[in-house]
Length: 299
Image (cartoon, rainbow, N blue to C red; front, top):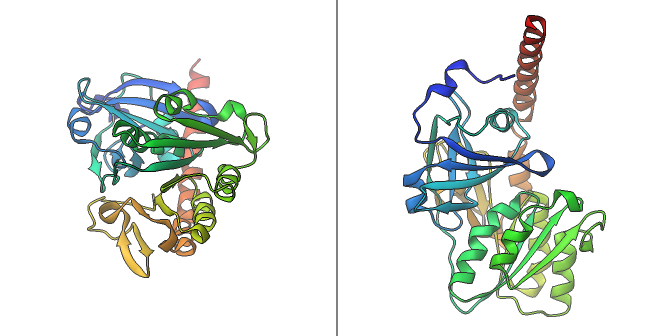
């Protein structure tokens, strides 16, 4: 059963899905042919994809890329209509378009100890940044978290690029019981060496990290993924307030100084279109149900 537009599968091969792996908590891993994006990609950057003509444009942080193979790797959680539609696709299907790489690459400075925190599928977003630090010889400590052990993502991949990987689960089924901030709090209290902290995940998690590190005056960065449309700074949809100044996440970010981000405003703006998103999902679910009933009747 597919609720995608019938013409969707007839697009060119440029952005074809080469691999798709269904992972935990409705998270899928995609390897997609995008040679021009792969050739220019840098750690910390993102792309904007669209499934079909008139479809929603959604920003996704690059988890990995392969210049020789001409591919990019994305981890996407099926939570809204577009991401659910994407989760219904399979290897061999093609996206209509991908724009990128977008955003300012992460600043990576030699001689630093990086502590990177990834919550849920935010782990995929910290992966290329941690790798960039590791490649220039920096010490890297990755703190990754999930609700429970079987929802943990990319533990092996993070282990390959980190001097240490510390794990937290909400239920204590693996690693430290608690959140990634539970581990960070202990590290700060014990005065472990850290020059830069990077946090990527839900807004509430990134705000908690900023609140923890602020008294210790540890440089802390967060990667923001607000509502976004064109990705070039023209529409202003992704505006955020940093240090009392309006910034655009797509061209001024996506990484910002966490101690100066207005997280309350960011949270409020993330919820602006909740009624429309809910209505869109209801319509989509009705279409899916109707189509499933027709297919069942045809059998």
